Length: 529
Image (cartoon, rainbow, N blue to C red; front, side, top):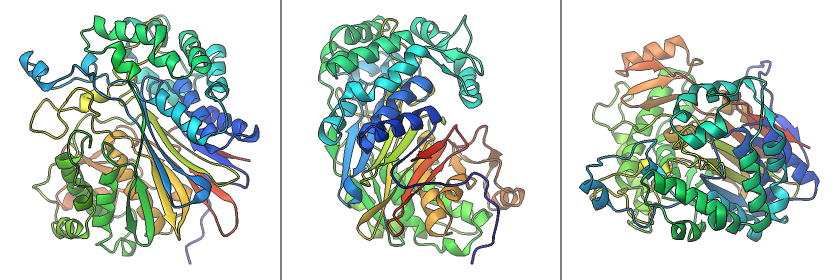
């Protein structure tokens, strides 16, 4: 029997439907759609669109999305890849000839064609009950009438203000008299509202063709981009077969490559070889084993994960028990490995995740992002579209599987998750935080399965991440754990900010209710009815 304790942030319980996401205004919009007769898909797109307005540094219509959908809680999971591609004219030789060795976070070449809008329309047409124009209404209202900034959004916006100063469109649309909007200040996005209204009326054509597309292409070309109107018009989301593994009897489902969700599955396969349930959930040994498993899983990711349309990805090998055995055997419980490439790349904690479950138990796991804060920090001046910088993940190396090529999708960090048990979907979940996300998925699943935590406890439990050669731990990680990790050979530092956030909804098939959790690391809100 677990020790009794008073809860901090409580789980949310409801019967008819629920949304959990990083901002209350978006969760409320989803619930309003459900109450109006929409299903979980309708509500998820509505919430994502609102987040593109009220949390514009984390996500936007100039970004990408991925979706997992369980219809009526069934085990057949629909996967939708809404990630965009490099311009057709992009080729590694073009970059090498110009001495470009890597693509910077603010480079125009970091801008891949936005995939989210096409994915929204496709998802609604195939699995929703409402028109795109209807579900965009809440987002349009917030863009036109404005919304007040919360403390977290005001803080993050302020930290990113300097990135916006260098671009005309970014200054025009996301700074006020050269500064970030302040706590409680009402912020409006009239240009974005106009663009959303055009999309509401014309669907994807209102974005990928016509004046909005012309504004976007002209903006990018003026900065030296290779993007064309044909690149935008050709953009299509596509359905994919999810990848899965078992972790102590629970099936964990992820989007396949080019997403990095398979990294979480590799890590879980390694962790299953250890008796984590017998360890202190916040102790040095547990954090050490997780860190080593993550380092090994990232090594596998960086060797293999790429766009499968361009490079064969050995998914079966990556998820095999043999590979998990080999990797687990490399972990020394008493000493940190010295020969593993740590997770690298830009460390950021943006992105939005949301999950919705409706009265029919349709369960949606949905993630939408610009990648870095405000993406590339390039904003189309007339349409107000902020461009993602997902292309900065490409390599300028012809031998690398993730090398840039025309029409190719880069390795993608954003990953929605789904847990199944007994042939039914039991929990859509997600954890934000860039490269951290696979670690967050594995940590969350382990909290639930190995330690019997409830949804909210599993989200709140302190996190650590072995990144760029050192262990970065959240403030909640005990001092004794930090000392223990140091003794094991890790360089330990406190994370500047918490590792992203997270949301989940448990479908309680036995009792018939829904149990939601949301992360205080952001403005997380789980709302049910």
